[in-house]
Image 1 (cartoon, one colour):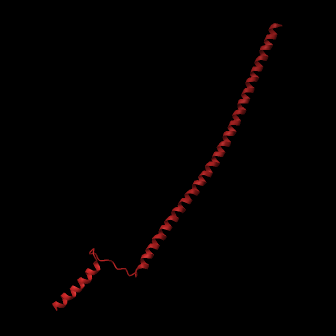
Image 2 (image 1 turned 120 degrees about the vertical axis):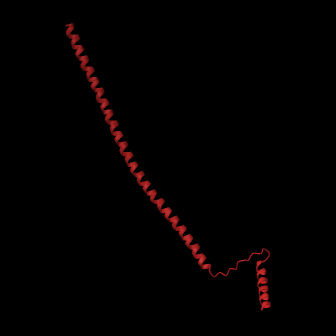
Length: 123
């Protein structure tokens, strides 16, 4: 029995040394049986990456819409403020013109009064 055991172990070690080759490491044998499982993982990873990319795109599009809405509101507010500034400028121009006319009227009244005083004192 001991001879059979040693012969069996010798053939095992011989087949083992043949499979190792020159590096001494056992080369993995691939049979392709679980290939579909690896492909499913790869497909799942790729689908997840696509989903993640689509999610990021959707979030960015949503942010873009929010920013566009903000820009639209700010433009409208800017236009309203510009209209208000134009109205105030027109009001100030009108007030300035009215003040100028009032000064001119006062000057005219003052000259009229001085001319009466002058004519009254001369007569």
